[in-house]
Length: 112
Length: 110
Image (cartoon, rainbow over all chains, first blue to last red; front, top):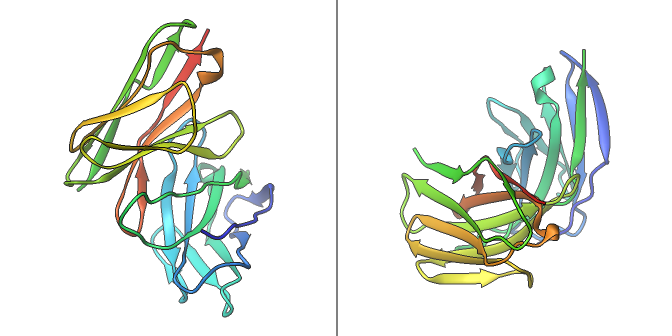
């Protein structure tokens, strides 16, 4: 599975949009981009995933560049409860031994 | 809907004592199950995964073992804990396109 790089940390003002970037320049054609977040001392929480097209759900939007080498997770109106570590993962769907490789992620701090 | 239960939430154990952490999944059959460990301030490290009853694959050599006695039950064990076994342990299950995690067990070996 392709490697991703993310900034170590970011700050965002409460109520503003939080834009979290992720580079995955070695992504292959059948690999999806996934985003998870982990609030302190809890298990990671699935946010969103996509292949080529931009995706939106009740939590966030995912913007994937045309060449698929990078993506951005957008939290449209960040709240204090969105403070967490955000993980960007790329992997292909498989039926066996699926391994989600989590890097250090981006620590997002939403400030009042 | 599918749910995953993991217990206990916190555990303090002395060095040399045994360990048993249990994870169960509801609302699905024949899930792929995983044990991860997370050291403080670090990413998640995959320890074991299982694609079926009695089928366990280990990703890293360690002082821990895993077992899957039932389809929706995954157990992480140790015969003798080491100080280095301290950490945050997470159970997860996956579909073809996503993974879902339990709330974790914070283990402190003293």
